[in-house]
Length: 529
Image 1 (cartoon, rainbow, N blue to C red):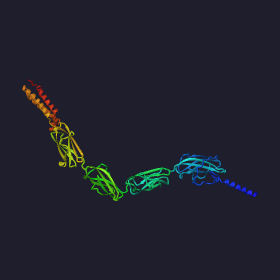
Image 2 (image 1 turned 30 degrees about the vertical axis):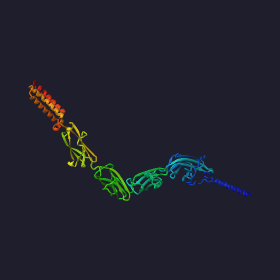
Image 3 (image 1 turned 90 degrees about the vertical axis):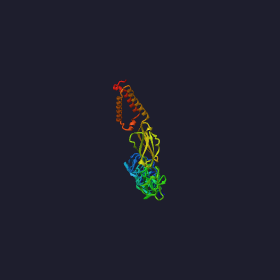
Image 4 (image 1 turned 120 degrees about the vertical axis):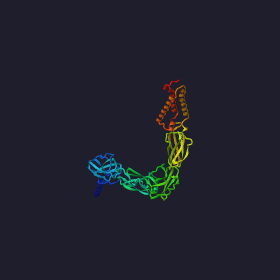
């Protein structure tokens, strides 16, 4: 009986001793202190622990600091029972480098490697524990740090150059600079995502991305490459390329509404993956006979259109390029055909500025037209008989003579304007000023009347016995002086003399002569009887 009791007591004592040595490091004491938490084992975030025997003072970095790469947690550690076991949890997961590692007391630097952590603001929980006395003691400190190990990516399109074309399947060479092993790449054409490159993981560096040009219309398109990191940092690059899967043609160095004439040289440029294409030209929708399925090489060329077959003015020129495989391309432009231009007019005669009588005016018309219409205006009034006259300028080497009766106009300066109208309604004008000189009836009557009075004065006095000789001599001297004055003033031709023969000069000379004849007896001292 005593032996059985001893065995039972020994068994109970063994159970108690075994339980005392099985202490867990966290919620229970069923494991010993030497137990280790497995790396990368998810844990629920521990509650805040506050032990009377352990004091942790986090000195740096301060809460909400930015960290990257490896950094030091500077701690001032005190523990009544010596060394502690340290576990670092980041957003609830154990950091593999700090899983129940031993740290000593005092000022300590704990190195943390952040390169394996996700980017952004993370929760760092520092858990310390010891069980030297058999009683589990725990202390925890929590801080938030912004982990920023990666900068934004840099995207650069290397090839093709912007001058190159996307023909068929073309490789787009792109260099993406990033410190991530992989980065997500999306490629757009005119804002539409290419299915093959929709947030596709790609290694950093230079890679080729194949663009299927046949999936798009010929013409200019925007290719955009976007790279995005796991933390959401983005960079983009774009280029404008000309997609050319078959054929394209354009006018070169020739703008809308430019003028062409004769055998006009039309500069064009052909884009095609083939060596030659067939080009036809249409003028107002009608095929030009000299540009009918003309074989034209790729690149810059010229075609010749005979514009003399078409009317003057605006015409729509259409170019159609055909690659021979069922693909065509059209280019249109409005051009002005001007094979004749505006005529040039020049006065040939008269040379004098003053004309008299029925005057012949000769002009020279320079134009490629055979006939033009001519109208003449005097002071902007159409001259009778000179309205819209048809003139054959091939005769007389382009010279034409018309007549104006100056007697029909006042003795004054008049503007003569010649207007030439071509069959295409192009107008040329030339204007010149002439003095119209003519003898007016009122001037003749005034001259006769004044002379009659001047002559009557000495004749009347002769009847009373006064001599005529002094008066005649005085009158001759007066006329010579008057003529000399006119010569000095430049009156050297008949038209100029007639121009100055006007009411003013007639009355001035006539009254002067009358006055001279009236006062002559008093000047020479001949008494009047």
